[in-house]
Length: 522
Image 1 (cartoon, rainbow, N blue to C red):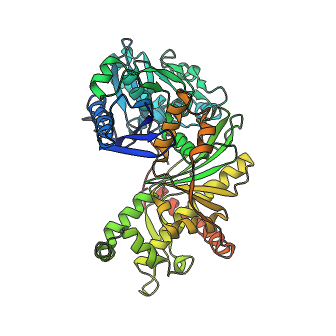
Image 2: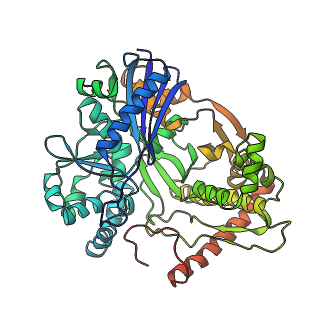
Image 3: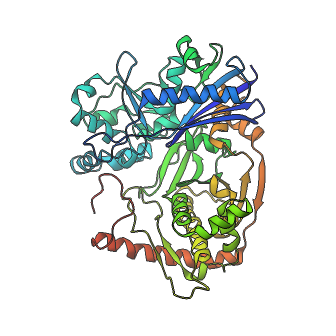
């Protein structure tokens, strides 16, 4: 039994990834899954636990087959998942109801809470670091209001990663890093704050045992062994939230360390002492980390990767053809062209994601400002570069907010995710932030973090922190160009002023917000 398995339940897919004990990836199997809108329930995204368990088992089997391994070769496993997604159970340990993290059905409940419990969101945020926008309380309240018979049967709540571990081990438990994203949690105590639930008229006895990441839960049950192909000797270990375990997989496990995770959405995370109170303006999210002594301040930049994909598909057919002829990725072609564009992209200002305003969070209408009709300067290459620069600028604004309330001075940033493959984009992040940027060699940081947890559970590693120090290696390092930073500092000021004006157009019902938090009224 010389291998570790990580099961990564993301928003759009589930993966089973096998690592050796040195952190080398051996195989991966992935299956997409779909979250379905319930009939007659706008903005709902239900998590189909029956179909998705079948997909999870298929991933496990295929990852074993592709590595030419059997279930007996897996010493231990753990799981990580999308945060905020919840599964509710009855008192017999059976799933009743589940929603994915993207479920936004509870807008009316968010408004009800804000209007009828004045100041309670601020009170809960001060303890949990979470607002109602992404939390579990409005969703559970929706269930109580709309499915009262089902609500009465609810005995336990936990997260989607916990659900996978429960299916495998028969043990129902949660961890601080994922459970904390429900918003019914204490950052300082790293445990449920059940009085929050009671204060808004919900059950206060539905919270399972909290286990720290890396805690041994048990072994794969006989039933799960038959379904998944794993051995009953394989140990099951508590995992955690995808961003926090992904941070461990990037080596971001010490106080003051920072990372930008550049995927479909971008997250900017900074490790802080767990006793650091969240900011009074509720501008930034604060989560429990997988390292017990730490919390993690988090900024979120919406749609940065998705906007780039939209731009590619809407405007870049010529670059797609060129990439196909050369046998390279289309983003490589776009970056080559964008690298010839002057710093600042000739003044083009993209208006897509705003910096994070967690307490009142909405976006302007998507647009480009300052375009002109000179095709030599206003073209696909300059617009592409402007999007790269803008993602970095919004990230820098979020990091500035984190520095302000934590007092942490950020000098080095770990940059990971699909965006970090771009050499130009990595350099732009360094230039905009004025920080050294390090690119890790690992391609599956979240899964590696879960594998670290599995290894901790069976004593292969002493702790998540020690595992990260031992396993994470670096591929590239970028030093900032401070002359470029002067240009970007000026653009950052212009962007913030322009975005404020663009939000006013939404307020005046002239343009339509790209995204608005559930329950928000302007």
